[in-house]
Amino acid sequence: MKREMGIARCGLACCLCGQNDSCDGCNADQCTDKEWCENRRCSMEKNISGCYACPEACSKGLLMKTKTLAFKLFVQRYGMEALLDCLEQNERNGVVYHREGIIGDYDGLEDVEKLIAFILTGKK
Image (cartoon, rainbow, N blue to C red; front, top):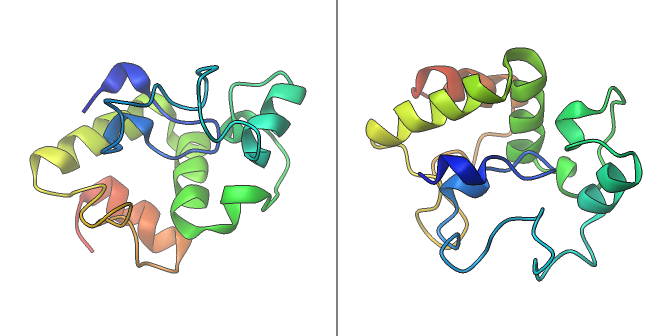
């Protein structure tokens, strides 16, 4: 896990992405997706670090997806360090962020609260 990469503006875990050898995350000016990413644009316009720092409840862009929304809410409830600690522990215990392409163990749950519980415990 590249902990220094942290979490993307939307809430996804850049630090666990399988593409992080060639991508510096959405805060990098060379991000290939920076033009279409509504979450990046919105948080930059609001001058905040990411969606997790925004008090508004919204489902813009990637926040329409359960995983992204769960990660955002997790940071709002428990903090960034707690999320990184849980992700690191889960990774040591075999939880994989990307197994096939961009789909991994954090995908497939449709209930945000169940996914938050999975992040906390590493158990579905």
